[in-house]
Length: 438
Ligand code: SAM
Ligand code: SF4
Image 1 (cartoon, rainbow, N blue to C red):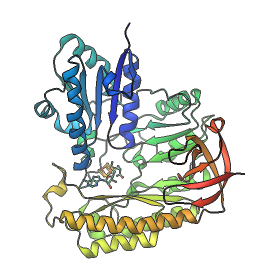
Image 2 (image 1 turned 45 degrees about the vertical axis):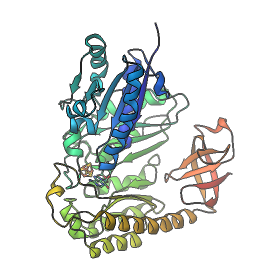
Image 3 (image 1 turned 180 degrees about the vertical axis):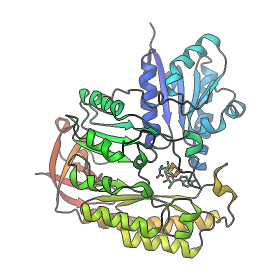
């Protein structure tokens, strides 16, 4: 039988990256091999993001380039999935007639069936219904040969309805997988040599709310018992649901890496209330202090939005002030992007694009200084590194991550992949560190 080739392009967050791994695994079962060469593909899938307007624009320009391949190969199937597909549904067919399939965020597990139908019936298919099951996120994706680290999705959806965010509308209500399912998946991953897992959810801190007495901290306490797993990470944490029990895990559970991504979004109480975030700056800072008290070496990263409707210069300065006091290890910062159907769309006090850009640039400049300062503080220290593979930026070197999620480049060869090595940090840069094996 002739090989069939699948080309997947992923936009957006880690959740989408993992969804694409699951898609590739499912389609491998019906004979599709993944390829990096679009021209070779029999099936092209675009896994889209809708979180900000820029992500949507990026997708449409890529789709414009890909549909030209269909002129050369009319048998090519083009499918669009992910958050933007969930949002636009059939409007994607109207915008780009060459698209054959639109599938939503709850329908990944149906793909083999949808593709087989497309092949037989040469029609257009749209499947964007929300499902009451967790079938879509429970698909097992065998890791690539040599991989040491893997994602595990523990929950889908979100109930928080932050005023700027489309996720609750496009990923549906929050639902958690059972601890048993999650543990089974993690055990399977260790059979492939996986040593580090990252637990994924929009708000892992509310894991288990639909399961009775299963908290996120209790899930971690179960996962640490899995032989072969040496490191556990998770993302993302909502500050309002960060429990004392979870904070204590950073001191008590050796396998839990000392890093937390804790999106603050703003340093102004007024803006936080408008955003419907459910905490004040004081409460946020108290959680940061608590984390640092329990685990002084913890690295704390965050997300910040500038130019949210109603954010005045004073509010923005309060964000700068918060960053100056907290000193995050790094920050993902964004200009507010208006999304259809969200509560923030109806708020007054819209901020000009040029003003948003000014705030963003200034904030990023400042954070670069803090990031470098944080990295420089590690010079001369010993760090434990899990070696992941070849360095992307530093010649023939190998790279790994510290427990605190920092990239370290070291001399060495491929034999080090998957090993935990001790290094001394010799030089700090903005985006990475250099280490010497001890
Ligand atoms: N669930 C996670 C949370 O609450 O932290 C992450 C959600 S989202 C994929 C990642 C980040 O995108 C958010 O933390 C927020 O900073 C940013 N974001 C979401 N909607 C946005 C919007 N409309 N405009 C700008 N940034 C946005
Ligand atoms: Fe969006 Fe807020 Fe849910 Fe995160 S917690 S996914 S920002 S609604």
